[in-house]
Image (cartoon, rainbow, N blue to C red; front, side, top):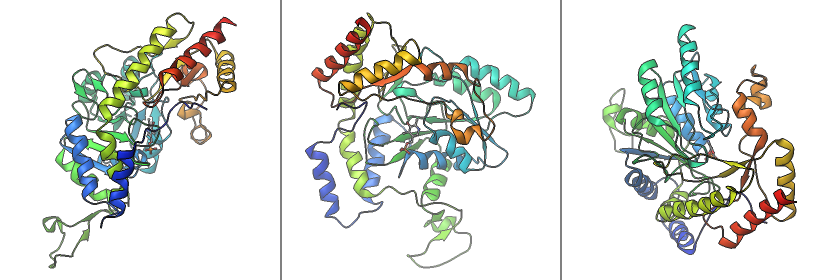
Length: 383
Ligand SMILES: *Cc1c(COP(=O)(O)O)cnc(C)c1O
């Protein structure tokens, strides 16, 4: 069975992890620092803070920006539930901005309209979290301009997009945002088993996030709230969590980072083959600005309608290709419906969801697998 996505682990990854298992440090230690530095150097950002998942990273991002009860966080419905859930963890409300049917990303025009309305009713968001869907960056400069104009923070959910670029800057560089969040779940571009990372250029945010990652504890005596003496001392100055990444996982990420550029190349090679092939077929694909580098976590095709998508999925599954759907609009999940959201709230996201199919896309996919997928889809449409 060929799935829609999977990790690519080689012997050097395995050996790196085994070496750490024989070392003194298993939990957060020197390899977390090495992994954080590798990502900071690659994407070009001042601070990187590794955590145990991107969900934890989103939670800490919102907390560090002061999100709490009475605040609203906006994101898109075309994302994994964690992007929105993390704001609910903070006691905030969540609202959704519709997507574009061309890029499957946040619609800047919908965002503008919603901001004008929110300004009139005095309900501007504290944070807007664009999601770089499938690895394609959103239009960050425009979002950043709106952030200046209306006064909100920007958190990039870049869970799909490490290794991708917005014009000349790598996703995660935070050139146009306060914080970016990366995921290292096995289906993402590189993996640590489970894991996430926050990136920021802001010293205060970085310090706050590092404390919250480990119980709100500091070991810097200049941050102590009263004087104590002894090299083993710490003070808890905030209410934090245990969101640490173990060194075992960090070394896997460090080893995977050496192959990031290669993974992105391979994913783009596969996307090119798919793009060329699908020109002849009645399916739509994600429209990419040529000055962006798409990290291609996913490759999504849009069928004519739900029935056609269902039939295509079943046909591929019979032929040992297991596709998936990204994403069911978050606000239509039962938990969010219970918060008051209804059908029809974001028409583009619903239209998109009814027709989308994520076909196989991962660095370890063989050319023969790619051609098998192409030919099956062609056969389906020529039946
Ligand atoms: C995977 C994913 C997350 C959550 O990542 P975890 O590391 O599994 O917690 C959040 N947002 C998006 C868009 C994702 O794809």
